[in-house]
Length: 437
View 1 (spheres, rainbow, N blue to C red):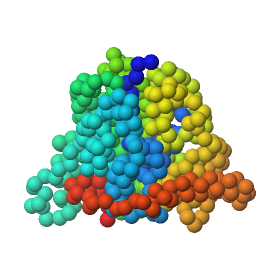
View 2 (tube, rainbow, N blue to C red; view 1 turned 135 degrees about the vertical axis):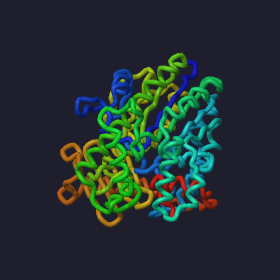
View 3 (cartoon, rainbow, N blue to C red; view 1 turned 120 degrees about the vertical axis):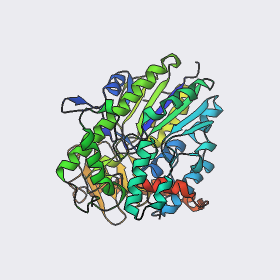
View 4 (cartoon, rainbow, N blue to C red; view 1 turned 180 degrees about the horizontal axis):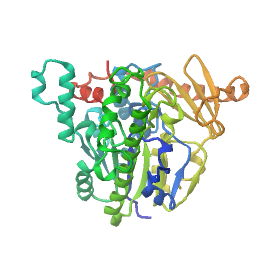
């Protein structure tokens, strides 16, 4: 069998329940829905963690990231570098099978400066982060931040980068390499702020989109629940925020259709997923804080055009992706093979140490002090703790978690902090809400 070209599209901050749905008469993912009819779909796909720095290194290497409890914020980039250095990554494994590997990424956690350039043959970093020189003349930090945001927006930089801004880079990259290729596109469109190209707006208005972002920005980039005007999020602002987010999902859906149309002659296998979810105050947080409720870790995952179809109900961790892809390439193993699912999968919040053991029906949570058990079939919003009435279930899932953590003790002990983070990388991550201090 000739090797198949493979395209993996990862949408940052895309939660599962905002896909394959209709709101106000508008579908969110009509193109993905069409593909799903001829794809393997994973109804219980779980991210390894609720933030990019804790999920993507595991999705790319298939191995758990060092779990110092909790890891210091300044150690996250060295931990990523350690993961790529000490483990054979997915692109490296595919390279051994004759693939040319390409990364086109808008996310600053996955760049040359975090050593992703060492494992991909070709890497395009999108959304360059620069500050305008005029900011030095301004008297206050508030004025400087406002000028920064306007400058970045006008230049299509940084968190304002949208996929149409760099789509040509993707096509150019594919045209310049030999087949078979593995193309990974990491989109930032569904990451806060939810700024949407005009043609993808179905629910949000221009005024509502920007107003909700200005009012809510602080709540996404800090651990407390105060907006930029030091108040709770109003119902109206939250409603506009969700409208913008859903339109961002629609934009990502259009990207998938556009890319597959332009690559139709290459007949690629498409893998679509997210690195983690996004919260809207279901459990007291917005964005992607260091917690592991369903809105944070339950993500979309489909595989289209692999020669197999069907729906996988058992939990599957995206940590299995490297093995799934490589076994498909080398041995023709189906993505729906039952070797990839499990009774339980583990997701861990790197900064807080909060962990989840996720089954099909039950979910166990531990924050190191308290533990909880939810029947997610009957209580999908995780409101009713049933741990006291199900001690045997708690014991089994706790033991599963302990076994998982014990497997990476040696890996954690071997982890050594790397070099200091370069200032421009630090600035870009901080402005996206990843405070480094």
